[in-house]
Length: 123
Length: 123
DNA sequence: ACCTATTTGTCCGTATGTATG
DNA sequence: CCATACATACGGACAAATAGG
Image (cartoon, rainbow over all chains, first blue to last red; front, side, top):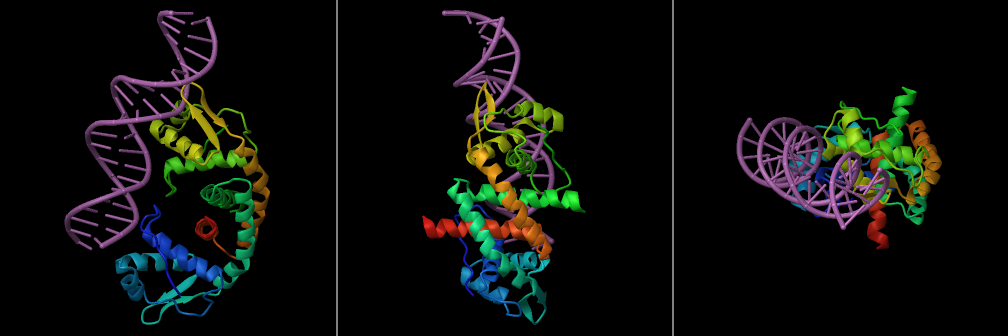
């Protein structure tokens, strides 16, 4: 697994790391039960602080995509398989939005807003 | 048009305003050519700073969803109609993700990541 | 052509919180 | 835990564009 970041992007580094791993899970490049690279390794490879990588892993754990335990490392959870099932539909949605001239960030923001609306109406 | 914000949410106020208006456009509650309420009005109604509302409007302008000119106000652009066309598909995607136990924020982040990937491969 | 009101645009500064190392 | 940097939010002042009388 290869974690990629781009220091020129406005998005925080920890979020980029989380996004990179999330994309790998959704694409099936890492599957449920497999272990992620140790945070220390990632930090050294990308020349960033260990805290930043742990921050990213913590976010993924909070989403239920991985589990973390001392000594065992970070392991992809079962929920990861569900993510992979959805990637195809997401690809189609993104492509259709692009065809209509809608910016990617705009689409992402609208999806986020829609999920927030659902929370308000269904809970 | 009614702009809603929730001070308890972690999301920045300006982003919440932009999200609220974006959702109204996508839902067809405001259509292309119609004028948004003046930033000053929104600021007074929500008891927030004028600059914060202008920040939100500027973001929507950068996305191509509205046009702004001094003296004339903020008007919904043609691209808004395209957004409205996509809302139904987004609703279906969000609902399916919820059925699979995927958190809304997780889905939104994955959509964002997918658009970033597209940028990298298509440009 | 002139004036006024409205609205966005841009600068100043300050305070607070968060991200990063 | 500590320091630096950045983002957010607020407040004020003035400029610039537009519309209407």
